Image (cartoon, rainbow, N blue to C red; front, top):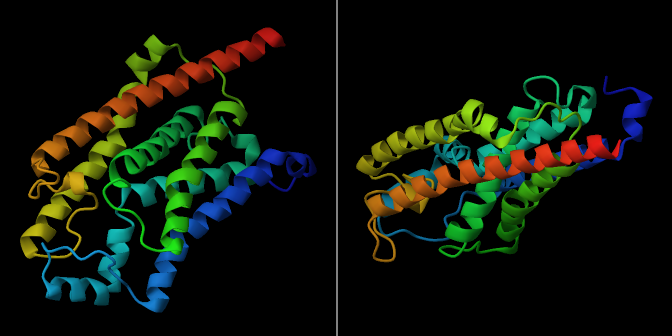
Length: 256
């Protein structure tokens, strides 16, 4: 149990709980600040009417739902939940379904996608406008991914019976596509309704908006590029992380 003395002697418990708190602050501080000081839109979009902008600013429910629809926020919440669970109940790490190897690998893949897509595709297009926005963005898109990746690869407990790459491809790889596919379908349908209704922020990311070109490239092409990129990342990152884990575990067995 989490209250056993030997548990609190393990530095990994503090690692997980400290960063869980930091990630929670990064997620909820921006949301709470908007509630307290008012919702603001730093970059005006000519595709929205002034009325749509005002409606979005005045509708906290719409803003909140939109906020938690971002892949970034959802993947951060997954990491937060995992760190809390593994921090409070370390003896279950690597054992039960939520803290087991496959679920942890999936979460690590998703937060890695957040890291790469944001820094390679989104940040060059639009940068945070204030120091607080930079801080929240850094926590969500840099610190959180690195914390999870490092812990999964080097410090996670009981990573046993890890499959070879070929077996992993055959038995497990396809499972990791479920969440991104479901997320994309839900947000594309939601985005289409919002676009047709003329609402602000119809799509979470520019590459989902099939109606709008960017940099001379049609929105539909951006969407196809994103699908190919994310599919490749799920395959590549999952294969890489599983391969590294397999090598590390077998190396430890040889040393012992």
